[in-house]
Length: 308
Length: 308
Image (cartoon, rainbow over all chains, first blue to last red; front, side, top):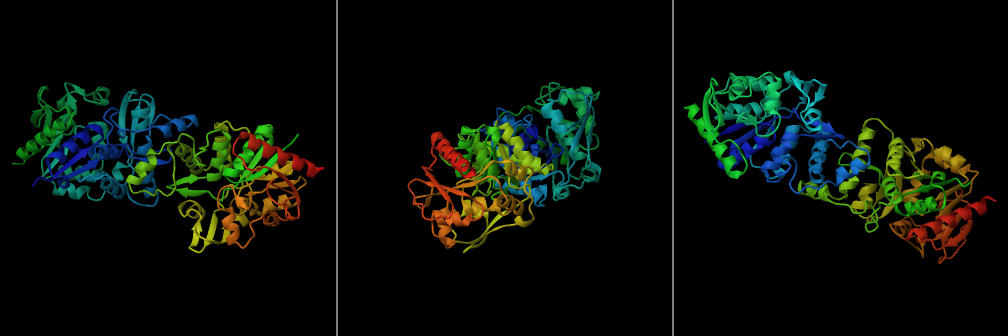
């Protein structure tokens, strides 16, 4: 039996998890999700990566936009704009229901992990979705425009500011959400999704108990590289690596995860360089269901080989 | 110059205020609005009567429903229902923007009156809209089904429970919102809208300083009767009066406002009974703009006569 844990951010990571539950029994898959992107907006608690995972796995994700719900309407945003409210972060009418229910439950004292489990259940999702922590660990960007909250950098400024450093506030004192350490301990493979290593995976790794559990792992860890042909499929990975003084290469990715991974799954078109870990390759671009299943299968069989 | 103050609830009252700003300069009209209906729902602060006034006066009210916005969409409610959220109180997609912005401002420590003034301004409304109080004064229904919060009685149970008594919690200690007493003192006529006297006007009158100001008035007070042919145009007024042991008549309305009004404006089709105050009559049903202007003009000229 394969029990897979995957550390993941939003879009790219959600695709890998989608592939995993296609090729494995869903109940054997646990996603540990970045919540460094979480923020309060208009008084609501928004968990962008958890939401992307929920919408992707339930088949409700908006494929055109790459975020939010399919068939979404925008009457709320239109009136909000007319009333002079902030319109830099788009909240669809249907999407709002999720934010309102989550915010209400959190205000009533429930934990993010309990609320997430409920929502996943409501959406009919069979795998386990765990926030990395129930504590707030906001990602803060130290940029040439000063200190920026993550969504201000990512959405409002569309990653244009040059990044000097990235902080995960409160990570040092944050406990993993209930179930996270157990899932890592019981997994027979751990995958790191092709999410942005610096913005989406590092927040998870910044929680000391999670990093320790990975360092002390018995199961193999395979990272799926977010790079294809020296570029990220989506998002600012390549731009960010350059700003951080890193070569935009799989070698840099492998070094970044040094001591935490046993293998790196890269795109077939890319050079193997000398990443210092075992390497496997497949076509890692995930556009449709077949792509997702292929990458998931490849990651699973690679990890299985590494375990032997 | 006519400076008119009107004490008002939702739908019927909003029509009278709409008529008033049609026949008077809008800046000479001040509406003091019932907030006993206000409640927290899904973590949001909802002010039904203020909202009805805002939508009516800005031409955005939904004429078919009698509440909410014209051309509203319902994607939020649909997803909320799918997620198992409470669906007994309808919140339209565009309507939500108002609730979210108000709730955010209140959470940031702003007062309901300040938020209301801002919103009225955003909606381009020229008259002054004042909540009766910045304090919470929830209307509680003591019914044959027990103690019910107002919206549970009014919306969820659709006024079906038999009412024994009505309480305005905290009214005794509530201060009028800033501007309320000044508006009453400076008005040269005070109107009571054809809103439900027991559910929509009494909460306002339950605030001691407002009642005192009305008792000590120099300006005449004219109430527009909510009854036409022994029935309310809308809502539970007649049913409620019967449950409270009152004859459903203009005499009962006048007695209810005893000592607070100088005149009662009734429908032409109704008997003048012996209400114990001056009576004037006109067709009080307000369906279109002309109707609203007619009732407003009649109330103004009646009050003007009473002042002489």
